[in-house]
Image 1 (cartoon, helix red, strand yellow):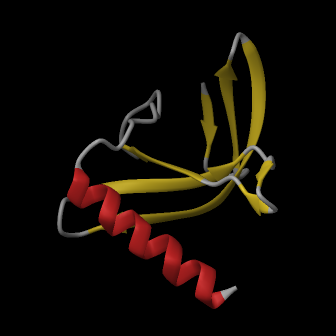
Image 2 (tube, one colour):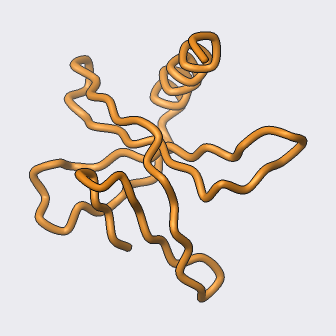
Length: 88
């Protein structure tokens, strides 16, 4: 995985292939001191662009994406996505 915040790109390995994704947004959460990145592989499901969100540590040299498994975190991110959707 290659996370390039400055150039707004992520390369992921999916099913053995490299997939290029565009970074759509980043944000920091002061409540849990985590950073998040929203990105898309520009695929669609039911006429909506697929958007994925992962947490990451901006101080980590490797910038590894972390899955979000905590229900409260998932709810907070859902609220962020709804806010962004209403602003679009």
